[in-house]
Structure formats: structure tokens, C-alpha cells
Length: 320
Picture 1 (cartoon, one colour):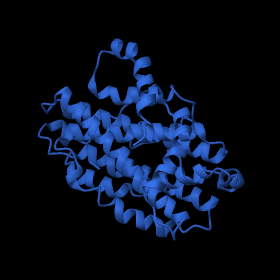
Picture 2 (cartoon, rainbow, N blue to C red; picture 1 turned 180 degrees about the vertical axis):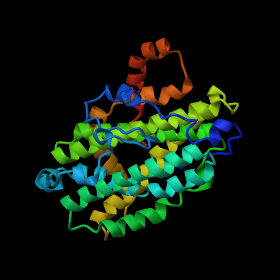
Picture 3 (tube, one colour; picture 1 turned 60 degrees about the vertical axis):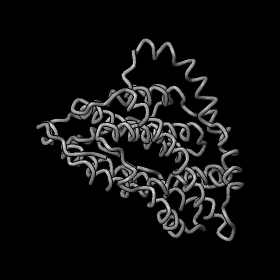
């Protein structure tokens, strides 16, 4: 789900040239939502301090998952399982990004930080699903999901410019950051709430790194604001229409393996999920993240946010 040509400027050949964004950028967005534990790491730092280490699966108290509470909420099953499928497939689209980006700094971060963290999200969500619904065959249905999903993650799907692909990645990370924020707000099972809080903070950090790379690359490319808008819209449409459909399809089939998944089933699921997400979705956070690559006047953005938020509430969960 991503693209890049070799950078000729020397700063793109120096693995220390691009400095990681400050954790303060994470708080800029997270302050719009319920606070979460401060477990952010400096993504390209080689010397992580103990109190700033990245969380691990061992930090999650799996034994104290309230299985009854989770099982009594069928929507939790669909949302968490669908997310576990997409996150577990992270190495597929990360491989495409790495191949497309010759910049050693971006490669280093993608390989050593972003990919392991995304895969860890998948492992954690899978562990949660298999703990709460042990009777279901997660592996078999993930394999079915992967066979279909992998057809989307090709080099042809990437943007024809390094800067614009980083914009596209910002859209994806906006989607994941706000998705896990909404899920965190919705969750009434304590361990899931903790887990989604940790994941969403990772996703905000990822967004900031992709935006940082975008700012660096655009200095060497002739990128117009209209190009950025087109890239934002294109990737937003792809994320909304493709990822959600395939992941929900195989999540549904895991519970109903003898039945066919059709548009009627999809409509039923989305109609059930939409009201819940609409109430808890962080619209303002999403708008701020999507607008940042456009470099609009800050005063104008702040003045327009209330109106834009009203529009977003009407459009973001519209019927397809």
C-alpha cells in the first residue's frame, strides 16, 4: 500500500541526517482524546532508556481479560478480529515500501521500528482474539484473508513520488490512529482498553515519522498542494473501501464458515458498527492529521475546525 525514487541529495544517504520527530508531536494529537500511558519511543534512537522502552506482549495481563464481558459484545469481535488480520499482514506492505525507498534512513526506520511494531500489534490483537474466542480457527481464516488482501499490496499501488507516498502513508496512519482511539473509547473490557491505548500511541508516532519524511522529501520534489490533496483523497478512498471490506468479510466467515458473505452481510455489519463509531470517533483529531501536510494557515484551520467537524460527522460514516 505504498513509493519512492532514489534521493540524490546527500542528506538522504546519511542514516543520521533525518532526525525523528519529538514525542511532543504525539501529545499534540493525543491531547484531543482520553490520555494513555506514555510508552512512546524515539523511533530511530539506538539507545532507548529503560523507562522509555517500547511495550511488549509480556506487559499485557492476558490472564485477567474479562472474557464474558468481551464475548457479550459481538461488535468487539468483528472490530478486533478484523484489525488483527490487517496488522498481522504488515510485513507485506512494509516490504513494498522498503523496496521502493532507497533512502537508508527511511529503510532503517521501516525495517527496525515500524514493521516490528506493526507486527506486534497483530500479535497482540491475535492473542486477544484467541483468548476470548478460543473455539475459532484464527490461523485458517487469516490465511484466507491474506490470500485476498495480498493482491492489493503491490508496487503498482504506490504513489509515483517519494513525497506523495509519504502523504498516502499519513492517511493510513491517520486512519489507524483514529480507529484505535475510537476503539479505546468504546471498549468496556479493561485489557482491551489498555491494549488499544498502547497501539494508538504507536500509530500516532508512526504518523509523525511519515509526515517528517514527507517534509524532507518535498524539498527535493516539485509537489503542488493540489497534488497533495489528490494523494490524500485517493488513499482515503482506498482505505475506506478495500481494507475494511476484505477484513470484515473474513472476520464474518470465521464465525459463519458455511455461509456466503455478500453485500447484504456487509451492510448489516456496517449499520451495526456505524452508530457506535460515530459517537466515539475523534473527528477533530482526524481533521488535524489530514490537514497538516497541506500547510494551511493555522489561524484559518483553527477557525474552520468546528464547521469541518460538523461536515465530517455527516460524511465519514455515510452509507456506501
